[in-house]
Amino acid sequence: MQDSIEMAHIYRLFGIAYYDGLKQYELAKDYSLKALKIYENQKKKDYKNIALTKNRLARVDVITYQDLKMAHQYVSQSIKIGKSLKDNQLLGWSFNLRGEINARERQYDSAIFHFEQSIKIFQERKEIVGIAYNQLQIGNVYLQQGNNEKAFSVLQQAMLNSQKANAKEFLKEAYFGLSKVYEKQADYKNAYLYQRQYYQLKDSILNQETTQQLALIQVQYEEERQKTKIALLEKEKLLAQEEKRSYLIIFAGSLFSILVVLFIVIRNNRQRAKTNIILQQKKQEIEKQNRELQQNKEEIEAHNEELRQSKEEIETQRDILTEQNKKLIEAQNTIKQQHKEIKYRNDNLEKEVDERTRELKTTVQNLLKQNQTLEQFSYIISHNLRSPVARIQGLVNVINQEYTSSELRNQLLQHLSYSSLMLDNIIKDLTEILAVRKNLNTNKEYIDIKQLIAEELEKLEKEIQEINPLIEKQIMVISVFSAKVYLQNIFYNLMSNAIKYRHLSRRLHIIIKTSVENNHFCLSVQDNGLGVDTSDTYKIFGMYQRGHTHIEGKGLGLYLVKTQIEAMNGYIEVESTINEGSIFKVYIPL
Image (cartoon, rainbow, N blue to C red; front, side):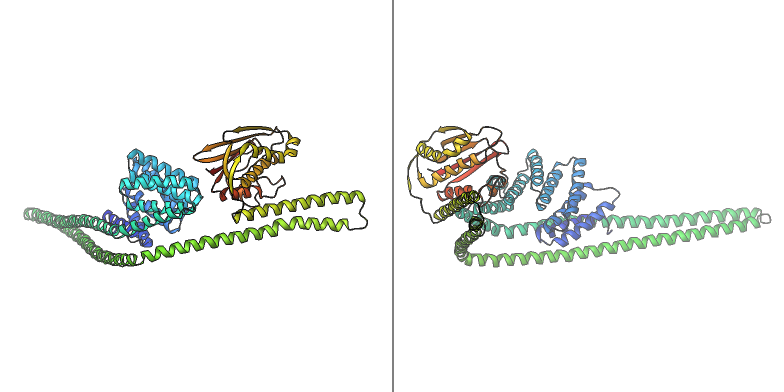
């Protein structure tokens, strides 16, 4: 009875209870393994329950980070079973589970692919819960990748579908994900609102969810107990039939023996003298048959003993289930008490937590900014100022040597002049960065865009004359109210980069555009140069980051551009293809 299909169902239900309800994952894994062993040992395989149990084992491995390789094997076998049974619901959840494993392994593209496969299946089945859960997983993947825009879009869809399906657990996680997106965007007001909704919904469903899960387990347990009881009655009926059959066999054997004896006696009366030897032989045969009958009787009794032992085992398992049911009820009562205590604490501490949270956020933000500023300027001093100063010192030492020729001395003086100019440019850039950080030069005025472009191009007249680029102007906005000093530096750096990183095998073509987009002034500089890798924007706009190391540069230009744009509450976007060119778009609010 221990390995019966009924026990497998019971073990599987306990695995679900310990995973979903009590969060005791080791016990969930133990019961699921017991269920799987029984399912696989049955002559007639229950493939769907085998697949569901393997998926449960895979989820335990994923949530505990135990054995992701084995989790992959479980899911692959479940997908194979789902395809053979043509069970799309099983396939949908199996693809979802494969995506969760990929996400744990940081294989984000594969994770998104499998989540989208799962969504297609649930869309065909019109199962909104499955769609919402997969959208929630995709949103979390985008969050881990730092793609806040896509994460926000997908999590909003997950929130709407969760509300439509009344899936409170998924709605709670959607609120939490949206609060993380807003937090990364430094929108702490909306981040706090969604985080508050998350905690309120979490508190409201904690007791309800636990109670529902335990009630469901109780109902399923009673159903399986009834099945077990019916199976026990059937076993007892078979036992009675076996005992009756044994008695019939003994009776038939005895009757046959009596008939044989009577037949021999009758013949013996007729031929006593002639058949004494035959009678003795028959008597021996009868004794042999009696021994065989006795042996059969002993075998039947042994079989009956086995049936009685099976009955006792059934009763023992029933007692175990009763005891476990009592423990589940005690756990339910404990959870209810804990929920009351948590609710009481939340009612009294909510205001204090909110106030402390705001204070801590403000303190952390200020400390992070100060720490970042110290690290950046420490890096500036150690890596950017030492190099030109050391070069100047080396050149001065060479010039001071007596055997230095006049021609070499002139060359050294030219190098000295160039190094001094580089040091001066670096100091100017650092001074400008400091001014931006202190919110200097942010006075706004009306700016003539055409005049500003002409003035900055005049500063680059020497470089322009050397390479003779084709410069095309599409000026749709001729005036804007903004910080002129910042806008001058932004345009100068974008033009200087376009010239510096041009493609040597073709004539440089630059397109300068101005327009209004979504209540923002947009300045666009497009070129057909070398292009940059846009997969990591920090390498484009970070301090001392250079897209092409074979071309000389300080790595401060685009960092200063981004800093000045953000000081005006704007942002910058870049589109680029390697060896084809780039488009830098600056957006400043009107």
